[in-house]
Length: 154
Figure 1 (tube, rainbow, N blue to C red):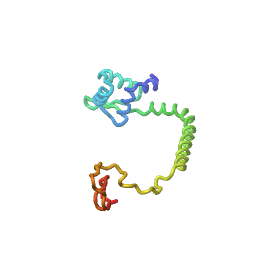
Figure 2 (cartoon, helix red, strand yellow; figure 1 turned 90 degrees about the horizontal axis):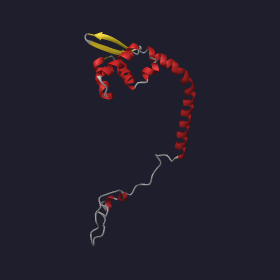
Figure 3 (cartoon, rainbow, N blue to C red; figure 1 turned 180 degrees about the vertical axis):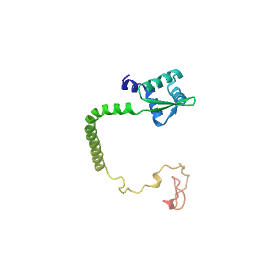
Figure 4 (cartoon, one colour; figure 1 turned 90 degrees about the vertical axis):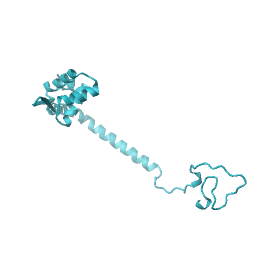
């Protein structure tokens, strides 16, 4: 099988992610994969066999358990092949990053500073509990106004 055939399967990619994080038993891998992909134990075993037979996984026996870890050799070969294309992408991605940064600088320069002084906010314009005006009563200093604040506090 070609490396991209192996990496093209989402189950095998997930298995590689799991065993790349650290050596795992086949039982632990199977448990996680079955819960995430709802496939049978034999199907997981078959994916592990494909990874093992094609050099993507190394297996060792520990008692009755089989411990899996990633063999990075095929991944390095894929990375070397992709490097040819990366050479084409890198200058374009760098140019894109430059344009994005330039646009951000221009937007910052054209908008007012956030730390600019603002007019003081009228406390009475803030949302407060509504207090119905009382009939025949005038707001006097020290008494609550219609907004609920004391006139002396304003």
